[in-house]
Length: 119
Image 1: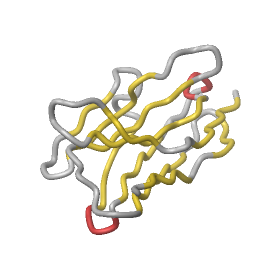
Image 2 (image 1 turned 120 degrees about the horizontal axis):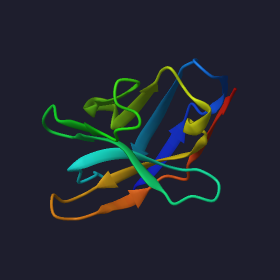
Image 3 (image 1 turned 60 degrees about the horizontal axis):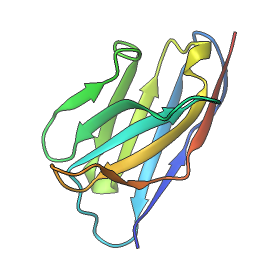
């Protein structure tokens, strides 16, 4: 069974930075993309960023472009989200996810890590 374990969340002041990590463990993982989503209180879960596992292709939500950077370490089965210039509106639970197939949805999720940005 594959598990995704996020870490790196916490409390930071506006303008600060955090780096989230997501490590996949367990049996061999079939991975097309890995990504990050977030869910703020009272809001729906929203896409943040994603990265292809075999080529250097990344995508970002407009709200985080230029501030967040997604990267990966294939040898460690780990994806990262570097978050700079954080804003209070970035406060949310951040979830790591795996998309196994090109035509499928993100189908494996981590438990989430809280990011709180104070003003």
